[in-house]
Length: 481
Image 1 (cartoon, helix red, strand yellow):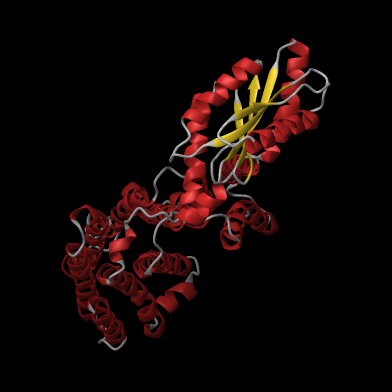
Image 2 (cartoon, rainbow, N blue to C red):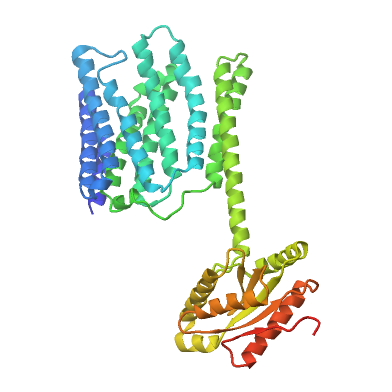
């Protein structure tokens, strides 16, 4: 298996890097070689995929190739031309990693999700803004406040944390997407996380002053830290060569990840970054980034409110679905007995107010048990669905047909007298599918009786139709009789 072999080579390459001679040329050549090998692995893996699925991997390969090449350009610029101050010729190559990977992630998300997921976008924005405020306070603002760097140097220095924030946002959006979550998915996520961990470590070192300088000069600390980026390169290569790479960009039926404990904790942590930073500065006796806290807190508050609004709407939608399911028959899709028991009294009250007739009928498929025994229960279910659909098609829009239980159905005919009610049932009997028939009892409301009494008369008429030989409609006698 190509991914397994490449994994072994990757482990050996990272291990070998730890024992290289402590010279810039050796380490730079090794890093470039690993980056180019990872690029080749990504391109090889992409070649095995359908052409339509290759674009994300080409983006990843481009970013890693340029970033790794920047390592070689950096040492040449330093050793031969003395270019060490920002921006160096290597910085555009280093920075190209961020937009290239972000584009690849955007393509993956677009292909994995069937529709735009606003909750996922809000979650990604919340986490990005929270960490963006952290980056502003400890990376962007201090550099921008300094007076020893040129404008281009400032812009270059700021571009790195901005690139990291871009990757954080896109990685969060990928994790919130639907679709396959196989090995390749997690290798990609691991590679992105490694890039972010490595960049964060360098930022922390830069803020440690003399201790950071000492750690950066220590071989035992610097080599493992540099290896984090090499691991990131190689994880993308492993992901591309893995057999599961075919499913990463597949639009699957798996729904997007919902709000679980881990995501909830991450969102809460990102939202609390602003007050935590403000507390740190208040404890130190000064507030340097007041406006950043204002804008950051306002943005996070609006995002949280938007997230809550979407959650409420989702809960309401699910509640409507549950309510509809509770009032509809699962097999036929018609209203069920509960919905019928709610509708009939309302229809009688309207008829009482408007002084209009109302007819009610009970239909029962003839010899349904025998049909089930002869053809099987799936065929019986099909008969119920086809018959109910055919009957419903013959009724008016104001009429209601519901499944009352088993093979028994009830029909409400507002504004219909006995003659109109019989005509409606005759039309329904004529379209009963699969050569089957039904017996029906029809009752016209007398304007006084309750809904239960009306149904009892229709039920009695149904039994008269069955006793008379089935395949017919019997009208109930008046309530007074």
